[in-house]
Image (cartoon, rainbow over all chains, first blue to last red; front, top):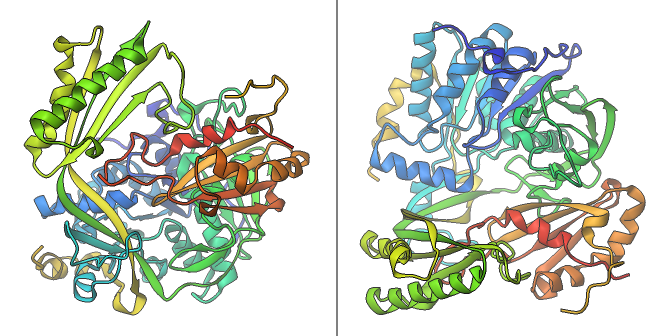
Amino acid sequence: MGIVKAQDLGSTAREADPPEPGTVRIGSGAGFAGDRLDPALELAQLGHLDFLVFELLGERTVANAQKARLNDPSAGYDPTLLDRIRLTAPHCSANGTRIITNGGAANPLTAGRAVAGLLDDMGIDMPVAVVIGDDVLDQVLATDPLRWEDSQPAASSEPRLASANAYLGASGIRRALDEGARIVITGRVADPSLYVGPLSHSFSWSDDDSDHIGQATVIGHLLECGGQVTGGYFADPMTKPVAGLDRLGFPYADVSPSGDAVIGKLAGTGGAVTVRTCTEQLLYEVADPGAYVTPDVVADFTGTVLREVGSDRIAVTGGKGVAAPVELKVTLGYLGGWEAEGQITYAGPRALLRAQLAADIVVRRLERIHGYRESELSVEFIGAGASFRGLSDVADPPEVRLRVAGAAQSRRRASAIGAEVEALYTNGPAGGGGARTSVRESLSVKSCSLPRALTKVSVIHADELTDHEEASDGREV
Amino acid sequence: MAAKSEHMLTVDDLATVRTGDKGDTLILGVIAREGAQFSVLSRAVTEEAVAHHFGLPVSRVRRCLLPRLNAMSFELKGMLGRGVTGVSHLDGHGKTLSYHLLTMQLKH
């Protein structure tokens, strides 16, 4: 099996100029678990990167991975991780690029062993290290802190607490790199910290150098969602047209020792890096731009200045910060019960009226035969204002898709929701088509805080991974 | 609904909006298309106006002005709540709701 090159996949990306001496180039290879694979290949092959980061965890992803691990102890890390490493590692090895990823998810040690085994098979020498310590289920069970959302105890409330993962900061990644790792695999680490770690390692910024860490957090925040900053999530065909979205390039930053950075992408890829794409991404998911809290710093984005310095090149300066909080945010995953839904489409004259009649039939039958209360069911009319949650209803839409969703303790009872929607095919109203149903195990996610002192971040290098098998897999869950 | 004036500007005419979420909080970044329009936007797109447009009490909406970026950011607390059943909307993250703010008329 030969090495896959970007052009083998039809890429038109062109090789970047190497970064200026003393400058560190760090790129985004993925912005979420479902992200595309080829943009990272382009960057690994043509980007002259020092670091390539794969961000693969959302709030729900880590809890879902814990669920997968409960069912299969060898699972629980990102299922795309090995494909991503297989594609990019030959280029990263040849080009001196180090890889950082949180794709270890709920099982970073097993992920580390799998990646090390894959690299052995491929004949690639890139030392792997794993950062552990984010799994704080034992600590949460022991201390039972209150949940943010409802002030109920995290461990002793229903349903059953299945996972607890603390958002770790950059320190473990930095230590792994300081100790010579070329691939660093973590579980739950705050997204910007995946970028702060390599930058702190490169420029020897100390943990309490809050302004540099704050600026590094701004850089990480701009890069962490991959194609969002290169014009993907930004694009609108009328107001914000972006060319070449089917070959959207992923971003990288050239970071100088002062922390000043320039965001760019490879020439020949689709998308755009402009002041507007960067401004939108800077504000993305930031509740308080003056105090963006991460495990590394409380970053201040309000002084950030974005300036165009070339085609698809935006300079980023002015990020600052103050010391990080003493407590870490923890994502709690609760298992229990099932969620189900059914959807069916009505089109043409009286589409909404027929969809409303269909909803009424389904709800009445779920009440009468399956014991649901109407308040337990969610009914949406897609195409008639469902997305805006009733704030802006559409009169007489040409096409409506009914969605009925609900939750139940047993799979059997949950399945009734989809079954009742599907049964509308023959039982009316007229012209219902394209019915689809789904059932899945419920997983609810909540949050709490945990004192940092209760967590212990460890770096495990590849040659020590087998020794940790017992420790990592020994706990009964 | 009152008759829509043909001349009434909407947020869509002057700004772009980016949606994000944290838990059940909806976060909206509002960015002026041209720097000169920022002052008009900041006068018209107030906490009160946004709360009304999203059907929330004003106490649940917080605005942060970012004049250096010709932008402002809104937190809408509780906008993405799942309700008593824990059953989420199809778009549980509220990704589509940036385009609801774009439809808001500017009164100034």
